Amino acid sequence: MDNTSQIDYWNGAAGQKWVRDADRMDVMLAPFAEAIVAPALPSPGQAVIDIGCGAGALSLSIKASAANVSVTGVDVSVPLIELAKKRSAAVGAGIEFIVADASVWKPKEPVDLVVSRFGVMFFADPVAAFANIHAGIKAKGRLRFACWRPLKENPWALLPLQVAMPLLKTPPTPPEPGTPGPFAFGDSNHIRKILAESGWSNISIQPWDGDLVLPGGSASETADFMLEIGPLSRAIAEQDVDPSAVKVALIEALQGLAGDDGRTRLKAAAWIVEAEA
Ligand SMILES: C[S@@+](CC[C@H](N)C(=O)[O-])C[C@H]1O[C@@H](n2cnc3c(N)ncnc32)[C@H](O)[C@@H]1O
Image (cartoon, rainbow, N blue to C red; front, top):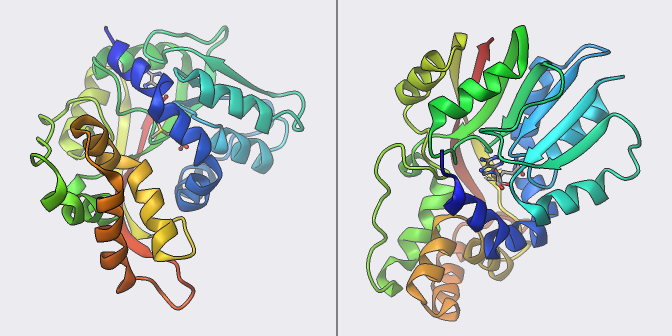
């Protein structure tokens, strides 16, 4: 299985942007840490793996919510794992972060729970990857992750792209269904098939709908964030477009949307997926 292009992506400019934006991303994505962790808290003594852990927010949240558990965050991004290690320095024992490709890496001992917040949609061969993850979990162990529903149901990511469209050189080509990327698991039938073929059972896929509070206390700050993250940032980088012109258009669009507190709230749609080993 060749995950080279994603590994390069998350170790290049995108990884650096996620490091810069980690605190702001964690505020925006906090509802998902809650949705993944709260109903599935591990019991004392249990071991947890956080796949595609990034800067470690979900791992840290589990460690803070459940007593006497051990958490291992696994991610291909060196800069994000470095930040996760720094963030967890004060936590002490029971939490570690490893640079590894989760599609082939195995824990030393099988674990009780595998979680992920938007970190499992990037595998070149998802069936092989989830079979490998399955091999690292105890019988009856649990898998619980969040992934995005299709882009068209996620205005927080779609709106910036739509606003920028007249300024792009060509409309970005939508990826083929299932191509590794943030929206690869939009189709719940696709997720169900991958998990069933890789050995998981009792699969449950529930919709999550809500508003995300975008980073930035003003239209200008939120526009800066939109230029950094998601499909728009990829399109700007790939097409070598002048971001300052896109920023002007974004500010104009955002001015009508911000609440009294200056914050922009946009709809988001995800799946919360659960399965048993
Ligand atoms: C959208 S980010 C989510 C990060 C983090 N879970 C969060 O919620 O902040 C996706 C993460 O998946 C990681 N990733 C992509 N492919 C991976 C793989 N094959 N193995 C481990 N991590 C991977 C990326 O490096 C990135 O940190």
